[in-house]
Length: 249
Image 1 (cartoon, rainbow, N blue to C red):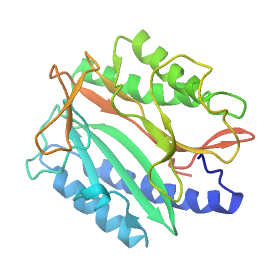
Image 2 (cartoon, rainbow, N blue to C red; image 1 turned 30 degrees about the vertical axis):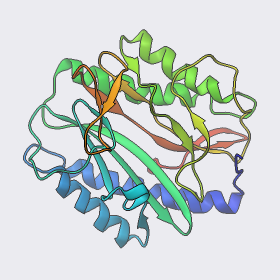
Image 3 (cartoon, rainbow, N blue to C red; image 1 turned 90 degrees about the horizontal axis):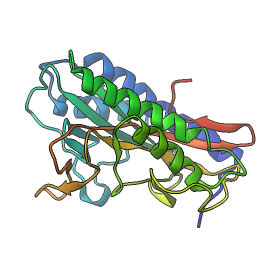
């Protein structure tokens, strides 16, 4: 069942989203060559708690950290490490916070130092594909209009959309109905209505969309060793179109 949020509930979700957005701003300031992803994780946890919220991922289905840190060919659910980041790396960071009973969920992929032209293009296309999908996040459209918008832009840019992982509804639970694929034909799935809140999150690979999971049971990587990028926003469907809850207000 898809849960529609009231205006009062959306106000709380805006606060949760702002906490995630503020923490990402702080992470961006220090995400440079030589820092470790464990340091990024520790900063995220400290800052979420400082804002009287709860790290959404820590302990979720047994995941042990606050921040998912997926490096280079890692797609999602990578774990923080004590190994320093290198110039030329890209790192996808997925972060959630629970505030007054509601969740905010967002992801970014950051360049570490100076990255290749190919990596820059991958990051730019992945981030833009999030907004291309979001253009369809309005009442009266169908869920897969978002999916198709993402896929069409990504594939026309020469990259591939990950199919094994999807976006999702979000609210009092971190993962609610509906699931939101980043590919597929338009005009299918539930009718979008005001009060729906969706975590839209394209994951885009440099080459093939095929993935595998490492022996840790969490880290998803590209099968061919190509780079992968991930961007996500928590988005409310309103009468006036999409409202990004995890963007800095």
